Length: 143
Image (tube, rainbow, N blue to C red; front, side, top):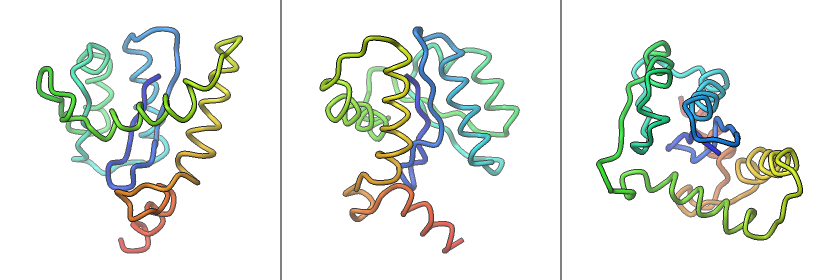
């Protein structure tokens, strides 16, 4: 799974699941995020140094959307702590409690978790115990 998070709201705005870690996985999540959020030019998109984020296709998608790439320092997962935290939470709250018979079953469960629970119901201490959707609505009202 690849995911794109809005760091201000902690909302997962794009995600993709495949049976590989090639560029298509990360690019698909990025394109979903771009389509949903329609970011302004100059947005900074931070990722780890995985080959799927450094490859030409992913970087070209960033450039086309006028998004500035930023990557973690080598061997420093704390640079990408919010995403590390999301994946830890996903594994703790969902994946480690399930056994999936098929990839489609896992994808449906991920969709329900991300779109139905994590973004809409899960409270975040970093957001003063609001959900990502609540934080996004509040930010939109301020802007």
